[in-house]
Amino acid sequence: MLLNLAWKNMFRHKIRTILTASTIFAGVFITLFANSLTSGITRNVINKFIHTDIGIIRILPHDLYEDMEEKYIASFSFTDNLKNNIKKTVNEEFTDIEIAERIFFPGQITNGISEIPIMFYGIDKDLEERLFKRKEFMVKGNYLGDSSKNKVIMSIKTAKLLDLKAGDFITIMGRDSDKSMNAIEVEIAGLFNTDNVKIDNNYIYMTKSLAWDFIGRESINEIIIYSNNIQKEYTVSVFNVLENKFGKEADIITWYEELHDFIDVMIMKEGTSYFVIMIIILLMAGFGIANTLIMAVYERKKEIGILYAMGLNRKNIVSLFMFEGTFIGVLGGGLGGVLAYFTSLYFSVKGFNFNIPEEMTESLNFSGGLIYTYLPLNMIIIVSFVAILTAVIASLYPAWFATRLKPAEIIRQ
Image 1 (cartoon, rainbow, N blue to C red):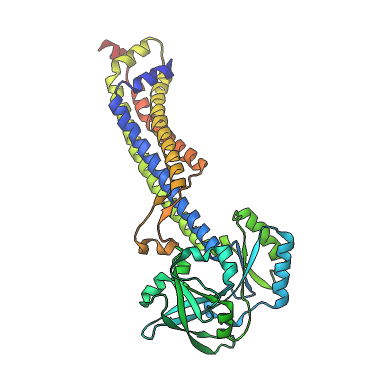
Image 2 (cartoon, rainbow, N blue to C red):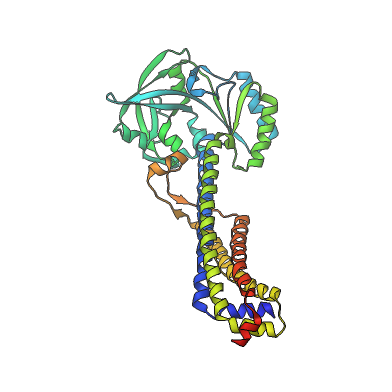
């Protein structure tokens, strides 16, 4: 009886009920869609890093990873024995992994007028193309080819800083494996844009043979473990095998360790923004529902008196108004959750165009573009539940206020 009566009462003033439920609806929808966007950005950046740069695991010579900027990177290298043992172990233990070997070292590039710091990477051009699809990111000129002896590729962003274009010549400078300064002139074969801020801001690629000529020896100081399975659990299983066998001889870094700072920043930003939005939901929904139900109490004084006369007690009256508040919460929170789910589902396939000024996103290693949203089911449940709980709590005062009315006085009036 009470549930039926509360349901009917909710629609006695349809506009008022709709406006109140709309407050909860808007809060739930905004919170969940914001969550799906930030989760999408996080997943996008992680995927970009893995599939354009670091794979699932990055292996460096022992003691190179910590305080890298203070060291002569070109002087570090794997011994042939260690390198071969790592490759043998990976190939024996895992069937879906490929290995890329690189040589990297810091330096500068100059156009004769200005110079900027850069990180040079000597790569196996064919393997890198197969694993990381380097050609897909080329926007000007050509990728490294068979005639790329003295050619490099750089990001279009780096080229703009020095007013360069494909076909121009630049001077690259840096320290070789003996820590002596070296400089050579190279041609820009092409320009790329990966949307990976780290690569686009800092990297220049060349063939390993050119890199070896520059540093003065044939060596490798980075091994990339690549797999299409980027689940953290799988990465952990690969890491454990490598760490147990080579942890004392090499620095073994997983993608989640490499992106630790970024993930922490995103979690902090998500937590802060959700907390603020949820506080707004609580305040707006709480005041709205409380105001709606208090008005209902004043309007239904006579009916409350009749209900008392019919044998209902104060507990029944409290339940009546709390049911009414709960229904409003379920209506707004439920619809908000459902719409957020389908909206997120749509943009998870079509992508959401998230173009904002670069200076606002660079610290997050994200350069805008299409974001494929991601909304976990547990987040929908949590946010919708909080909205409904808010409605229940907000209905307590009006329900208590209704019990303060004196039945005899109401009936006499």
